Length: 236
Length: 246
Image (cartoon, rainbow over all chains, first blue to last red; front, side):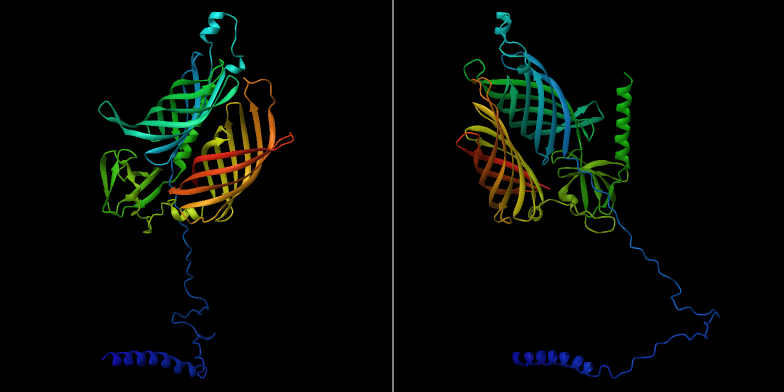
């Protein structure tokens, strides 16, 4: 039974191959049909002389579809001002700038740079004239490259009709601090709270600890410089 | 005193004008319905749904969330998973241009940060690179070296060869040159700041994480061409780095 099926298939295949082939042999013998054209004297039914071109010229222009790009706002740029407590050297105002890139709804990368100025140690105040640092060495600048985690995203409710998106986040990072004439490897970490009054504006409150080793007073020790700041940033 | 406020007002006006000048992308909902959240995150409550066939406007995007505005003017955030099924007004599927594994192979620009150890000192490093081909790229690295006795900066330019770029975890080889600036600590006895040329050869591992992100780990053997009789050799370990491509 199967054999005959194959035979039928084979024959069909052969026929379909051979028949168009036969037609191919006959090609070229036939004279091409005379094109039916209107002679110069003849006129159309309406009496007007027939023109060569088509009556209606199709004017089809390809429509350019320009799609507006979706505005992606994953970057955040801002500035902050706060108080930095420099261990042994009083607390002072700190200014800084902040650039963040939101990787996902949970994580972000953050680069911060800030500057402050150290005050006088208790020893300097008591001794009167002894200065541990020169004027330029009291400048305190730092930078940090951090990763942040939006631990508690949520909303805050102001009154009856307003709700603003917010997030409590944790941040940890590495960087450098220039203080007392030297750069020091600094590990920083902390937490912050972000409220978004609109979709593109954020208000931050941050607390950071900057930790580094210092041997300024002869013996190496670890210092913790705590910072609290308020900031504004825009998403772009 | 009147100048700064007027300047700010002008800037704000310019900013809002530029925002309004942008035309917004219209899309057609193809899912049975999409859910609008109050914020760009999975935890924010759903307060509105838009059913299939409705045309809405995409105002902006943040990470994997899209701010949608309906015909009635309701604004809410929709997740990317639901947006994938939406259509252009012409009926074509919406191309969200998601950086994924396919794009990983065709990446051209990449950048990132790394941290590690430079001959006993701590190291913070940033790099950027451009790929000529799947394997070969040129890279610029800036290092901040923070040691106990000296600090320094170095900037290097080099070639990087990724052996099997299509693998998720791929080894690479790197070779380059640059300059290093060394500044001994001020608490030390008088020593001079130095500027030297540096050459390096290194190897590393690159791991494709997800979306447009990569992890990296690298070792470099540096030769510092000092002005003294002997050159200095420094081992540089970058334990972990985070990179992204675009």
